[in-house]
Each structure stands twice: as structure tokens, then as C-alpha cells.
Image (cartoon, rainbow, N blue to C red; front, side, top):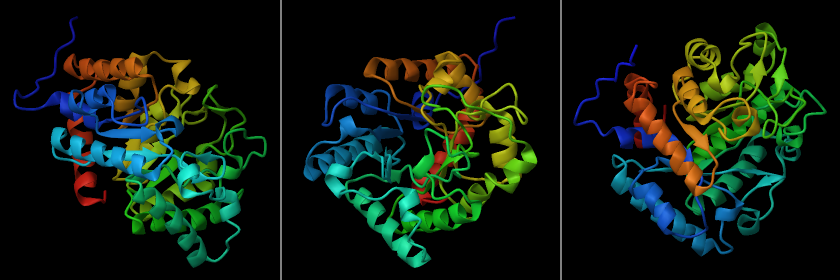
Length: 344
């Protein structure tokens, strides 16, 4: 049976709507024709900076983020773009050469007084914001329960849930005071894994009750704090959804995060080109499964050609009905609300 195409109103700008659901990498550390195409032709709603995108001078970075913002506002429903960076402190730092070195989350957690910790993070996030970024993928709300975890470790605040809750709350509040959209990662908790999801799909046997008792506590706090964006983890939790990693699981995104935890903000995927996702699913599958599971924004790190392929594939899947038009409208409404109001 031929797939029925969705009824899309003629006055609805489908390409621009899909673009708002895309958070992509880009080439170079200054304005260039490829970046211009991503913003003017494809009208992407968000860009992530990696080390190769960060120039050696503060003035260069500010000039680039300013140009991105002004261009994106003109081409994408008048909405500001998400301009993001991974600046956690410690070993995950893209801006260290410009803003100075900040300690890892585990080191920062040694600042036991809440106000002192909040001042520490306000200093970090203010410096990030001054460069023109409005999203920092921090804090990490994973609990470092597995000492052999190759990817979390000192990126977590602690091995104890309550410490992660308290420190994470201070960081989220500081990010908001610094003028950033607030974030939390990696839902529902990446701390108990023993392999690196950048390369391999972690498989856990954590039960639902154990997850509620431990890993979900920091995310419940973040939702109470009205965090704007929660990032998913590419992990397979066999006891809860044996068929789909969290990023592609309706049980985790639509049921647990939306229905049970009542999260009203944006759900963003971690990089869909990470090995845990790309080694198991085609690009078509990664796009359709994540959106249909409930993700609002898809993040991908790729070269320019790969990014264009991702964008065109996403657009075609909505056009042919693989991704329901209503899902795009639903996510666009959330994105528009947060970009305009700064709150979910």
C-alpha cells in the first residue's frame, strides 16, 4: 500500500519548521559560504560549536556568534537560534583558551556551600554568555555509580544522588541567572555504563524501580527547576525497553519523561552520529525513530555534506509521512515558546 502523504497547509513553511528541530555542527571558525547556506537556505534553528569552530581571539568568536544570531533571526520565523557549546569544565572544554580553565564538576562539588557553588557556575556561564552563546550543555546530571565508566567519571558531581541533585540545582540556577537557556544531560542517567557511547552502545539491566530510586532524582529536580532542555542518552536499558535505546524509545521520552515526570521543555538527542546510534541504525532510522519517539530537536555532528544529507533526509521524511506532520507542529510549538519566553 502506498504511504499516504500528510496534509500540509500550503501556507505552512515546512522546511523552516523542520530546520527549527535541527541542531547541527558547521565547518570553520569564521563566516563562510557553507555556514551561510546552512542558515539562509536550510534555516537551521541551532548550531553547536566544537573546538575547531572556536577562533583564537575573543573578538572573532563574538563576531561569529553575532552574525549567526542576526542571520538566523531573519530567516527562521524571527526566532533566535540556539548557539551552543560543551563547556563543562575539566576535560570537556571548548573555550578554555579564551575563558580560562574551570574545574571538573566533581572538583567543583567540593565547594560545599550552595551559594559558593552557584557563584562558581555563574562565573563560568557568564563568560560563556559573553562570547555570544545562549546554551551550554552543562550541567551533567549523571551519577558516577560505576567507577569503571569511561565517559562520565569526574564529569559527574558525585557518586551519590543527593549530591548530584544539590550541585545540579545550583548550576541550573546559575545558568539561568547568567542569561542562558538551561540544560540537563544525559537522561535518564549515563553513570552506570561501562563503555563509551561515542563508540559502542551501552547496555544496562537497571530496573524501573532502581532508576526511580537513583538515576531519575537529578532529572526530577531539573524539571522542578523548569529546565529548558533535557538531552537524551544513547543507552539501551533492557529491563524497560529491550528494543530501543533511550533516544529512540517512546517508553522513555513520551511516557517516562513527558507523561510520568511531566517535563514540558525541549527534548534534544545527543549527537546522532555517535557510534552507539550510527552503528546500529541508518540515518533514516535515526531521524524518524527519534522524532516519532518524542524528540523535539535532533543534534548531529557531521561534515558539511553529511549535515546537508541529514537536513534533506529529515525534510523528505516529513513530506512523505514517515514523520507525522503533527509531530513537527508539536515540537515547533515548544521550540517557539521557549525561544520567545525563555521558559517551558
